[in-house]
Length: 186
Image: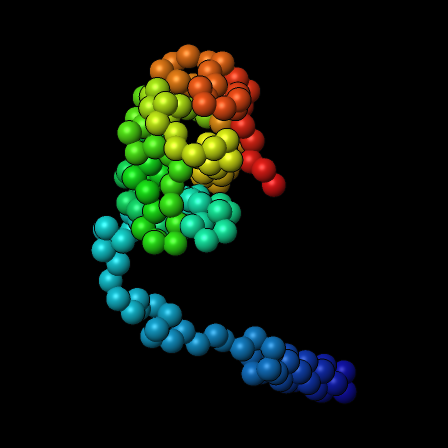
């Protein structure tokens, strides 16, 4: 009798294990289906598309004179050597939109731009001061077009503007001091 009871217990145990596995497979562990669109790209990505990145350049709105970002897709290779200089040169070149304008004089040259800690030291040519058109508000906008653009980068918190390598310069036409670093107006 003990042998028959032992065999019944083994058979019942095996049946319970098999039933448990079937329930687990059917209801709990549902296999995920991989569709063809998940593994096949809709179109091939070219090498040029792979290198593209989105940047924001800040320009002045021609209607309300508020700084506005203009999104651009550029080749990341343009930003490899000196991204700060490249961004300011794009600002000087001006916006793509007719509703925006730059207040930075077109004759301005970027002599150098380097990151020192979390501050960009931006060395501009004398034309930045001498060829400024308008009043102190427009000159201030030209500064903040640069500051807002460069502080979009995570590593940049302020911008120190030098003129031909010299600190402590100011505009001749109005009292706007460049001796201190500029931070983004939040």
